[in-house]
Amino acid sequence: MAKKVEDYVRTIPNFPKEGIMFRDITTVLQDADGLQLAIDEMTRLIDRDRVDVIAGAESRGFIFGAAIAYLLHKPFVLIRKAGKLPAETVTQSYDLEYGSAEIEMHKDSIKPGQKVAIVDDLIATGGTVEAAAKLIEKLGGEVTQMVFLMELAGLKGRERLKSYDVEAVITYPGA
Image (cartoon, rainbow, N blue to C red; front, side, top):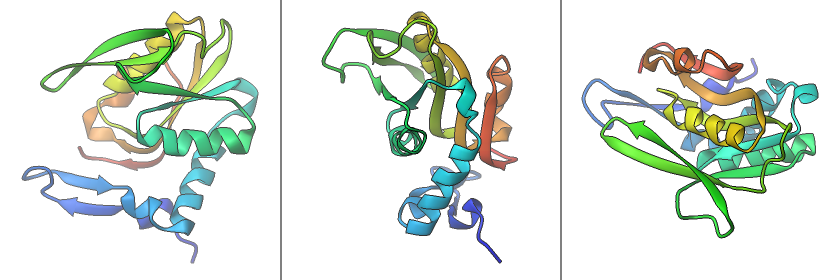
C-alpha cells in the first residue's frame, strides 16, 4: 500500500511540555520519498489559475514554497523575520503566546493585483500567516490561497483565517 505524508511525520509525546504531541516534520524532509510526496501533495492543493506568486514564511515555508514555485514555474517571495532583508521593506507585527514578533517583505516583491498563495509547513493559531497576508495586502496583492503541510485543528488557526482559502495536506485534531 502506498504511504501517505503522515506516515513520514514523527510524533514526539510530551514535547516541548507535558501533554503536547509534537508533530516533527524533519523525518519528512530526511526521507526522499517523504519530501517528494509532501511537495507533490501541497502542489496539488494549489489552484494554478488563481496564483501568480508563491510566498513562503521563514523558515520551513522556504523549503516547501520554493519547491512548489519551481514546479509551477511561478516566482517565489520570501517572508522573513524583521531585520533580515537588505532592500526597502514593509513590516507587520503580530502577537505571540508571550509577546510579539515582526515579519517583513521587500516592498518590490509583490505587484498590485498579483494573486498570491502563501505556503508554510504548519498552521497552528494562524498568527504568523495572518500577518503575512496583511503584508501582501499592504503591497496590493491578493491572497488567494494558504497551503500548509499540517494543521493543528485544536489551535483554531483556520477559524482565525476564515476569510481566506485555507488548505492542509494533514489535519491533526488536537494541539
